[in-house]
Amino acid sequence: MPQVNLPIMSADNRESDDKKIYLLKPRGFCAGVVRAIDVVRIALDLYGPPVYVRKEIVHNKHVVDELREAGAVFVEELDEVPTGARAIFSAHGVAPSVRELAAERKLCVIDATCPLVTKVHLEAVRFARDGYSIVLIGHRDHDEVIGTLGEVPGHSYLVETLEDADSLELPDPTQVRYLTQTTLSLDETEELVARLKSRFPMIQGPPAQDICFATQNRQMAVKAVSGYCDLLLVVGSQNSSNSKRLVEVAVNSGVRSYLANDYREVDPAWLENVRSVAVTAGASAPEHLVQDLVRFLADYGFSKLEEIDLVEEDVRFSLPSELITSIK
Image (cartoon, rainbow, N blue to C red; front, side):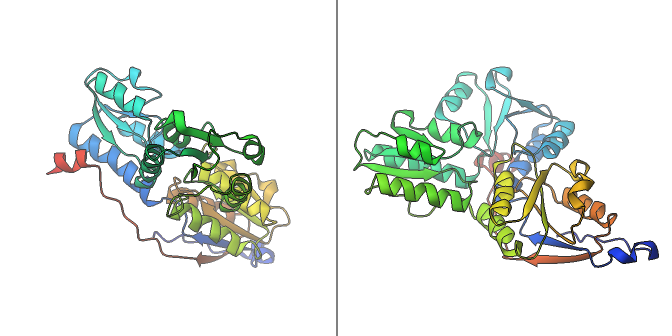
């Protein structure tokens, strides 16, 4: 991991020398995000631009802008892609109807769906095949949820809130399974699952929970530091589900918290009367944005830096088979 070098404080700033930054680790890019970005970059190197990407490859404005400058063309839907062109599916996954449209348009598809999202899709298909109704816990407009619901729409029911769980009606309450979006709050999901179990005692989840390891690790790091900091700053985009959940986890732990796309969105008023600030980043936020924020905070007297290392993440995902074949 690149080291962040704090500037030496001048004599004029000595009264602020005890201000501290807790830099949380793990933070930033997860394995699925690294894989998705690599897919776009390698495709551009192999085939040259333009390479079309359906939706944002990951939910981060800086990443998308950098890839756009490199030659990626981002579109909302596949009907914007020329027939026969090369198209990449984002890390959030797609419904079968999207794959069918890609085949109809004879697109050369590279699938950058995170393997952990693919796991949820496969679970939905298996549960439906076995005759179960599927309750999907997630956020209605998120790309990942749209794709998962599209796998077996006739068998799937979305639950976003406790009110949704209370009003849910199923064809057979004894034949029901639940799945979750991979980037949810652990605590809120636990509460929703408990409510579903109270209404549907026979409901069961997948063998291993769907909330991904990176989401869990970043939330646990926020909880670990919540008793030591006055403020938590999360680097991430407003449409990043896992980044927004980090803010919620901090607030629920009693720590004031804000989400900022980069240091330029940080209001200096947030730092008033703050002696210690924790910094983390959502799973799609580049590390250089974190370093920029640390330097920004140093200008406001936060001269001490301590990295809080919760767990080492060493997961790596292989590239899609379409790229591996081309590389060979």
